[in-house]
Structure formats: C-alpha cells, structure tokens
Amino acid sequence: MDGTASSWARPLDRSFLGAALLAALIPLLAGCGERAPALGSKVSADRFEEDDDDGSTVRVPGATEVFAPNPSGIGRTLTPGGSINTKNLFFHTNDGSNSPLADVSTVEARRSAYSMLLSKGLIRVGLEVPADAEFELVAADDPYGFASSGELSLFRRPLPSANLGFLSGVMWDGRETLAGMTIREDLSHQSNSATQGHAQKPSPLTDAQRAEIVAFETGVFFAQVLDFDAGLLQLQGARGGPVELSRTPFHLGINDTLGADPTGQPFDQDAMTLFADWTGLGGNRLDEARAAVARGEALFNRKRIDITGVRGLNDVVGLTTIPGSCTTCHNTPEVGNHSVALPLDIGLTDASRRTPDLPLYTLRNKTSGEIFETTDPGRALITGKWKHRSLFKGPILRGLAARAPYFHNGFAATLPDAVEFYQERFAIGFTAQEKADLVAFLRSL
Image (cartoon, rainbow, N blue to C red):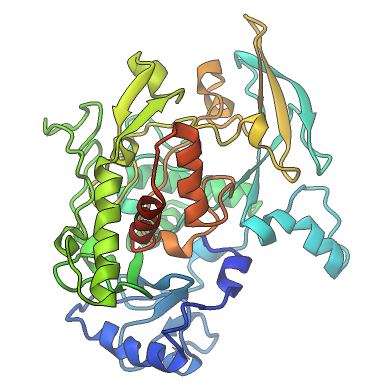
C-alpha cells in the first residue's frame, strides 16, 4: 500500500542485475534455509497462479516465495499462510481523491482528481477543528477549494500494512492510539474508523470482521532481502530480510530514549546491529558495498546530531539542544520507529516548505493570539491542544527502499533527499561519503 504508481513504474536501472540474473536469483533467495511463507509483487508471470475460481487467492507454484522488485533491489513479504486472500476485508476499496467535490466524470478529470495519489501516493484525510480546541482556523488556502474549519483536507502517505506488531502509535497523528489499550485493540478500532471513513460504510464492522483484519495486519512482515549493490542481505553474518525481522523481540517502551522501558533497561544508542558483521569488509566490489552499508548503520547509531527546535521533544525535556543521533528518535531495535508514542514536529509542515499542491492553514491561539501557519496541524486536530500542532509519529523504517516518496507528506522524493533534509534541518555536517553510506544502509532495511 505504501508504494506509489510512479515508484513502481520506475525501471530497475541497477543494470548489472538484468532480467536473466534476477530470474536466477529467485530460487537462490527462496533456498536460504528460511521456511517462512512470503508474498509480494510479481517478479514474473509464470511464478504465479490463482487457485480460487474468482482469483482472490494468489499462491506460488512449488514454493512459498514471491518477491517485490524495487529501484534498490528486492523486497520480500512474509504472510502466515504463504498466500493472500484479496477477499479479506482489509482490501475493501478506499477513496483517495483530492476533494469530495472533485470532478470524476472523465478519465482526464479523474487523473486531476487523484493527482496527489498518483504523484506522491498521498491520500486526503478529512478532519475538523475540535469544538473545544485551544485554537481556531482563521484562513484556509486550499488549492482544491474544499477545506474549512468544518473539515480540513490533510494529505498523508498511507503507512505500510506490514510490521504492525512493532507499532507504538497507530496513524500519523496517533488518533487511533487509545489510552490503556494494546496495539491489537488500537488496530481493531482503526479498522472500523477507516471502513466508516474512507470506504464510507454506514454501519460499524462486527467484532469478527475487525478480528479478521487485525489478524491479517499483524501477520505480515516486510523488509528488503537483496540490494543491487550489496547483494543478499542475510549473508556473512548480516540479518536483513523479513524472516529475522519476524523474530525480533519487541515490547512497548523497549530501548526508550527517555527511560520508559518497563524492564528498566537503559537506552542503548546502538539500536541497529543488522549489518555490524560487514564492518571492515573489502577487496572486491560486493564486499566494499557491504562495508558501506555497515558504515551507514554505524552513522545511524552514532553520528552526532544536535537536536534543536523539535516540538514534542526539546520542549518536553526542557533542553534547547539535545546531543543525540538518529536512534534518539528511531530507537526500536532493528526496526527504527520510536518504541513509545512520541509525536514530533521536525519542520516538515512549515509554511516555508509548502509546495503548491498542499493547502496552507493559518491557526490562531484563542488565548494568546499567536499565529501559526502549517500545511497540516497534525495531532492538534485530535487533542485540540495548541502544543500538539503539527506533531507526527516517526514510522517503522524497514522496507524503505520500496516506499518512496518519504515523510508523511511525500516531501522527499528519494532517500538521498530525505538524508539531505536532515542535513539541512540540523546542520549535521555529513560528508558526501557519509551521505552515500547512510543511504546504502537505509535502502538495505
């Protein structure tokens, strides 16, 4: 769900892996001694068969492996039964147009109506300003002519429908993260909200229907399994791919930066160790590429970032500058999201970064009169709190190579663009080599 039409249409241009070599790699990948079932996008038509009369279940003849090519390599998805039933309620259609009033009468009109979905993989979410909010909407500049205080149009990337057992917050703004509830209960609530919202189903889902959706969601794992430069990501001691991911321990608060781990364990800055065994490799092209991935992982763990001006973090701990690294916020071991709900504003919705295809909203604090401009008020539309404006959760990082563009609003078209955003935002001082190494690591997740 998180890939866009443009990203999937991109050719596999890492040319040393041609079609013949790709075909040869599939049985090698399938024979890595991992028996967990897998499902993903088609690699070749003869690898697939539909064994239900209506074609709703896709299976792989002779194996349980299907792989998902992407511009950096190949991703792989594990499912509990080695197949996927597209009749599952999870797959019921949702709308993703730019406005409820959009003209969809012709093919060209529909292309325009769904331009945000087609160009950036963004889906419109409609939310109102809470009646008891500490702020009011004083202006809405919506290029699609719909938004008002009664319903703001918020354009956000669909989050991955895999690895959900590692979540600490559900939805970008955490609106489905319920106090005192487990993640499975949060997902159950979210499945009903999405069905009654995007899919416009008038009646609530039954408990059995919710359970069916949650069982599907929590049984799916996705990660990159092969990189076109570094090769297979589970060799020479590396632990890439979804099989190892599915075995990764997790509990809410694990390795929390601010000491909220319920086991009492302190925060470990080295939250990512998947490719540590590749450190120092060299001598040939493959080993040099693997060494770059390991260097990128070390940078992710240890490269100092002076974190400033991040609402939801600096203001919460009362520090103007926090000496940290990528893992300060991406602290869940081997996964990369935050292990407790910690929505942040890193500046992605600032008026200065607005693009012409996004609305711009002007908010006013009812008490102080302070004015704030943003392309998305984020969590503030859920809580009504002024201090929560433009706060969003950090997503799970596994499988990034298949999920361009990046950030909740598609601000970064590529992983190098995402790294460049952080470089500029926090004045990190990455060298060109460090940027390349960090991208090599991120695309191997």
